[in-house]
Amino acid sequence: MNNWLPYIFGAVMIGSAAYAAFSKHLVRVIFALLACLLGVAALYALLIAELIAVAQLIVYIGGLLIVLLFAVLLTQRHTQGGPPRIHNRNVLAGWLLSLSLLCVLFYGIMQLSLPRQTTEAPSLYELSAGLMTKHLVAFEIAGLLLTIALIGALYWTKKAQTQTDTD
Image (tube, rainbow, N blue to C red):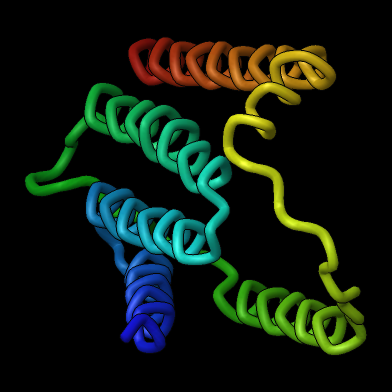
């Protein structure tokens, strides 16, 4: 019964990623990215990786994507009528870089040899307890890096807004 679910979630991810890559409306790109990230979280849940699925939902969808959406909606100035648009430059270079990265990823996946799992996977409680005890410093550093990234994004947005106001 669940054999077709990964294919459905994969199709949703590929479709929304393609739409995000080719769309010219920035807000629609963010919503397509939302669909893609939800598909990734669903695949994690199907793989019984609850902690990663919850982290995907909280960090990427609940935090980063919502901040990105608010940043776009609050900082975009509409000089022309209609929604903000993305202007693609160097399309050929982007395609070449994307295809070469895809080839490298496929080569790496084909060379990967997975060991057989002989032990039972730890529970969500064990993983979260380990994250909050043994790996607390790494968890705090990741939170600090996300905060620094958010402050940097706000700084550059404010700087670009003041340059636009003076022009």
